[in-house]
Length: 590
Ligand SMILES: Nc1ncnc2c1ncn2[C@@H]1O[C@H](COP(=O)(O)OP(=O)(O)OP(=O)(O)O)[C@@H](O)[C@H]1O
Image 1: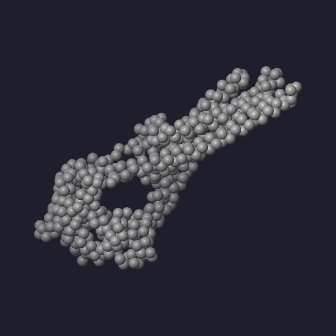
Image 2 (image 1 turned 30 degrees about the vertical axis):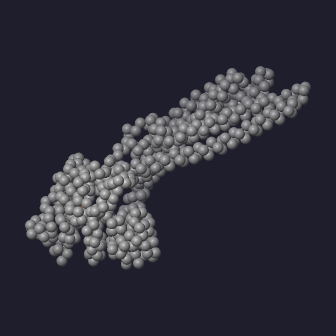
Image 3 (image 1 turned 90 degrees about the horizontal axis):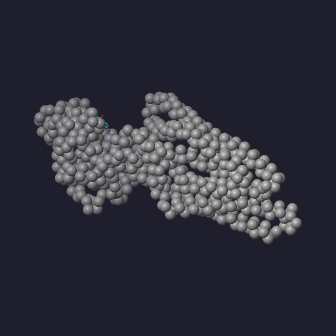
């Protein structure tokens, strides 16, 4: 994280952008030619002045031909400069936006490759701002690198040379200001940097806070905790205000200081130039060129100084983006298409074996000891056990979210680590206690981009959603979402059950899938899932003994270890933990 070297971030960023050398060179060339034109313009302006002065004060009268020629050339140069500036600006905008889109795509891709652990330990607001605001801000350094630096360095060189040709004395005076301005700019940029860092981290924290507030707003209201949330918001808001003000203040002092330095230089040049014209050591046109060039010199220095602050800010952002892209990936989070030769490997329900599987989320606290059980093809295995026993952890491992720390999970003879997560998840459906819905129609939520319309209709019927869908204002086309008020918690769970039915899975994981449904609906859904079971190897996590009793095999887990396993009848007969649980469960239901 913080090991990202700040000074390396700019070079790193430019390497990530894949701007295309040809396009970068074209943009820079256009900018350079345009800036050369902008330098030649004032020289011709001086020539025009001298022609007019000679014409009005000399004996030969006005040389109209020369005057019109110079004016014509000058006009042509300005037209070319305008054209090139426009073209360069357009190309630059496209290049910058394309680069930003590419960078965002890389982060998006990275997000799918990061281990779940990363998201568990990182604030979502921070991630969102890295994906959006920081990416945009990091890209703002492209324009300065391609245009500001080459054009202004060139302007500095040409202007300096011409100034020396015109008048070495005036050149020296104009140049003395440049290093002073540059030093001031660098000092101010350094001062602004910590404020910029704070501004970005606070913006991210504020985004995270607002997101949390929105997703927990019912709880906040129910517990009257809004004042607490408000206080946290106010504190972050104030911190953002202070850091932004300080950053702006530090950067804002730069302009006036440079303007003051330039004003003094300009005054000295104007007075000295005037004296030299009166003395006859300098023509009026040359004096004019010297004054205009001195201004160009100072504006080039100012632009380069602006580049320093912009790059400061862009580098801070590039560092943040780099933190995400440099995060170590986890093979277990690898995603993508299933390789064609292995696609559809689960043509029939597979056999799944947990062979001495051990696991710990963090090394100091083992969650699973040595878990071994076999799931025959097309059968249902129920895992029951106390809260925190490790049941969901077993489903997480089967989905390939984490790697076992010991032992292996074998599907049809292949270790899941060798298969890779894509193939493991091929034709796998999961329904959890927390129904996961995205903003879209009921149909889209069930199809989830994979199932045909008739599969959706069948799933609605088999999943006993018909009546619920009929009661919705636009039926299957009603828009729902995670926060949707249209559906109850149980109904949302039924939508996710229908989604699982629609994909005709070969492996089905049900983790308290019907916990929010009433007993009658649960029974109906159980029947629907029962129909799937012949073609599916099912892992069922449940606290309801009546649901577990329907399974072909029951595994009883306590503190990460299997304490007993067998059929409902075997375990009732054994009179152990399961039998006691069944007794308590039926007593509590009575
Ligand atoms: N992402 C995680 N990071 C760290 N520890 C975790 C994580 N998820 C679960 N745990 C811990 O692992 C242990 C087992 O959790 P798990 O969710 O597998 O239990 P469970 O049997 O499914 O419980 P429940 O019946 O309450 O759902 C718990 O002590 C829990 O605190």
